[in-house]
Image (tube, rainbow, N blue to C red; front, side, top):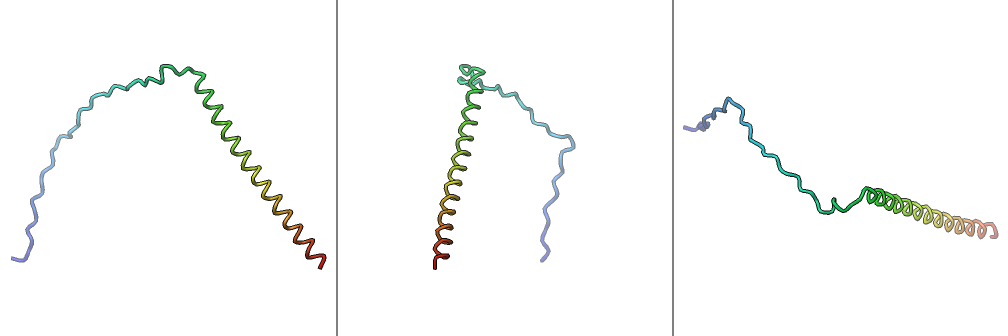
Amino acid sequence: MFRPKLPDVPTLPTAPVVPQQTPVPVPVSTSARWLSPTAGAVAAVVVVGVVLTALLAAVAVSAVSVAIAAVVLRSLFNSANKR
């Protein structure tokens, strides 16, 4: 009376079911037709140029901040020695 009834276990099919796959045609993009082989090289040069410019800017900003810190520290040391 107080025991739950378990559902029947379904039987699994013995043969594996393999869905049929139809090949999907690959769409040809319209931009691939007018791009020449040199366009990839130009894009690579532009990307490398942007990356190198960003690195140069980061080095310049770091150098300026180190120079400012050196001037401030020198000023603090000089004022401490005069007292």
